[in-house]
Length: 146
Image (tube, rainbow, N blue to C red; front, side, top):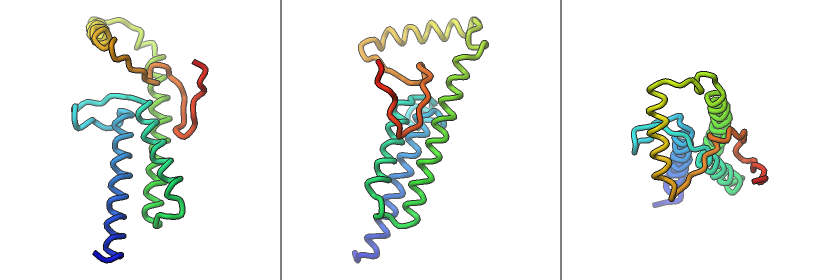
């Protein structure tokens, strides 16, 4: 394989990696259906980590990418950051809405089901920013006041 073919292959592989991380972050934000579970769920900590990974990749590859690779990486990061902020805002609005506090038989069933699931998960607690409503732009580190 000559140098030109190798560079073309690396460009394709780089694009696949960036797009794969982009898709993972969208799934983690609940914007896309998880192909493994066929469901959507939100995990802002994971999404933040994936976006930060892309930002680190951009920094570490500075001046070493061709124009197409650089543009793809920058566009993915910007798009993910915008979606991240929007999803956190939407999540906060959903939690604060008066309809969320109304009780219905279906809501009671779901709450009981979630309660049982939480009891089962006590051995492996999970923390998700969606519960805290914390505003965060990936690339910024939240304060460690806890």
